[in-house]
Length: 576
Image 1: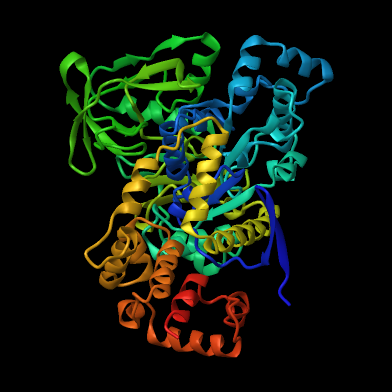
Image 2: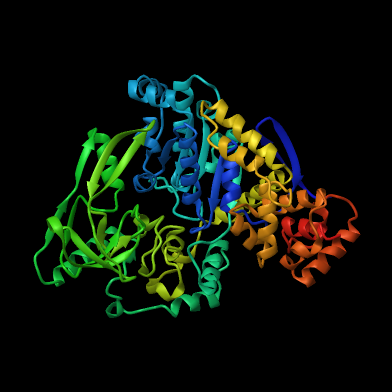
């Protein structure tokens, strides 16, 4: 008999088999987030965690719900347009709270108003938040909101990857947030994203996967060392990542001084309360005073609304435009005149503070810590002084492909991840797979009903109502509901199940669900979809289905050793 996990979800408990080889894509995670469950959204670097949570935030706001967006660090808070959890909750730099501390913080009018009005809390980079800090924020929320439930009854979404940088603390025995009682009390649903949007180099991805799994071998080390360079071989415009600030400051100053011409300075401006502005400044990758010369290698620190550049795009200062604004030639050949942009801190839909600066920084060097969350075409990385678990993994995973990696040095610690996380990651994958099968067994109508219930309960307005009504009323020439007709057309023209899902912008499990509905009304033939599954796979699954002659998929999945997803098994089952 297969072991089971008991998942507490909303108002029911579900027991399902354990496995952890199922793929979850962004659309599935977003659908789950919209149900209002407490969610831990995780996945490898480049799997789209931030994109998914940003889409969720857009949906919330369209529904009239303003989330409290926070992060474990100032840099991460700047990326998401929020504030640190420390500032949001009022705990500041405290390392523990006495009863007097709790009373003092809870009595502050602006803290009480902020936490009292909140309805949903999002915390980015949860891996960098200690269990103690996590619990302190929980205590304050319970006290202010007068509700004896995690975070005073707020819906909570945690985002991050525990393989990346751990909490910063003077105490080397610091515990991760998942070790806290608060984490357990939240009964989090885990969504583990597995699609890769950053690395498109199979060999490099294999190396990163080996680091992540703690199974780095001689072949992986040799693959990395092929990219080893000497000090004189620096690519001229690639950013250099170091583990220590001293190396960063030294190289940026040295490289700028080598260029001819006069330095032009660009000063940051600000609006809002000093303490909030200071938080934005600390988290901003652009410096308070940006010094540039013509010919300087630079990196953009913000995404362009017009799509001309993204955070991490590299370029060179080629001249000066109107009002002395820098003109940047990017690596892709685009010439961009760069104007100041704003970093804002929003709360309850209002801008509480903002800073304005040219969205650039010198690209000669930066710390690994400040690079977290960025994507780079190329980088020079020195890991000879790496001192923290995950530091090397974060640095290497910033780069999209092996050809863009220039490695100056590598020590033993650089390729190590925290040993505790290796086992915990398996638990997260299992939990995600459990959730995925639970939702796969639900109809679209059931999921939408849960989403509507959540929006109503939290005081919002169902934003998708008109869209859903059009979809439900729309009929194709064949007499099928529009959604099923569109899925059938996509499946007939796609080369793979994943391809059909991308055409429809739906989760793979939803595509299979549509096909099952089509089969149920007699509108699906084997010829419509058989090409999506290779013949040898079809034969293998057919045999397993014949041996396990019932409707349960779990025995079939385990009999096949987890080689094929539940969706593929469901697809083959439709051919019988």
